[in-house]
Length: 450
Image (cartoon, rainbow, N blue to C red):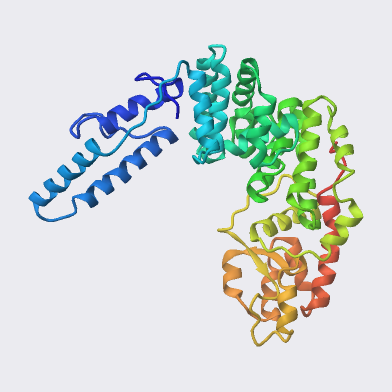
């Protein structure tokens, strides 16, 4: 990193005291064991631990006199042969230029470091470096405090997409450099990063305080997308929605987001990059004021999201490999079948409720179906059900007749309906899945919620 003498640059101030107390002070210093409270502190400590292990290797001999001799040799080597190159420049702006040049010539640095360096360099041109640093540190500190420190680059990219359209990770630095050219641009962009951090952290966490002024339905939508479906490519759109719209409209848009997410997952065959571009386009239009209502957004996405007929057709033959997604599908379908609100789904407690494969993944002798065909059918949605964990564990690969008795007593209606069948095979799986596909269209609609 470029520096400016003993005082260093503003972004080092937060680390300076920790570095001096835990690394430079003598071993018996009172604050030597200060706990790290920033991700950068953790990295400093990690580097110190690595150095300590290396020193231990150097003196790794049982004879004290040999240990001393090895230390003397290394001290002599550092003093007489190691070289530290110090480049003194006329101003900090040139230091940033050198930093970028080193990266261009092969010094591997993260995009986050490059972006920070670039913004600081531009801000320094009008003596506003401390202002840019304060905004950047506020953003980084807020993200690291929640345990999402490794998502800083994702946040910057998603924020950029929400304002300026789709960009790949590898192109982000160049796009920002092309757009943010002046000191004022740098300060403004650092301000956007600071201001939108709470919004971004909120769409990652349904329990975030930001949702206190919103309904439980809004929280549940966030929970479905981030916890139960674990989808991230829709985040730029959600960020634009929560930034630009009223709480009521956010709720309605998020319900649509849930439906689009499920429909894209079921239909498949559409690259995640393509879907991300569609979401990015709508996010940018919301930020530009071209889409201002849930109805506007629904109309725009109707052009690309799978329509009812296609969704129902694909759902009727879909397989699900990820158990957490299958559990969500079945819980939402269960509530829709009961004519309850499928958004307000019960918690996904896998310690209590398991995903049951009616036809087992490893059919025993009581199952006469061909093993090849069984592998094709076992993960079909029509073959999946929810069952309490204890019952599911006891059934294992039992015959369908044995399982039937357990299904009869299940309080989940879609599971208990399976008990009405006298046998279980390909025809029964297909029939059940076709009925579930009709229910799916109502569970994840394309219409704007009332």
